[in-house]
Image 1 (tube, rainbow, N blue to C red):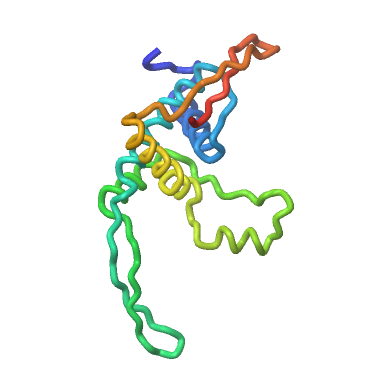
Image 2 (cartoon, one colour; image 1 turned 90 degrees about the vertical axis):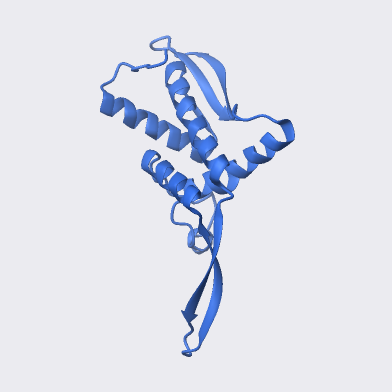
Length: 169
């Protein structure tokens, strides 16, 4: 099943996979059918590997800013290096831009303060959380890949389709 078509035209199939991968990377799990999970797993592993290999490519840049009183000050800013920037753009072209959700019981002011400096929460999560986590795991265990697993949950009642849970390890 190297090229599973999932019974859909190309546009719909690619949109389905992009949606499932985006949801999966944002939440850390996904419950779906076995064939869909395998396709989403394949793409998610590629994205995590790309982020893991490039997340340390950072360049320090000095910028001059003008304060309110008119004085100039130089500030050091961390920018993405060329490899990380290319990887970020590639991931952004594939994944949908899922915005951060308010947590239960969280006030609006707290939510705005927490998310004010993050433009693309999914991309930031991939580079800041998953890439660091799996790079450390690769160093300690000497293992690259294998970031996800599929757990079979049983069959769906209506059409007897195999339902699985795709999750990050």
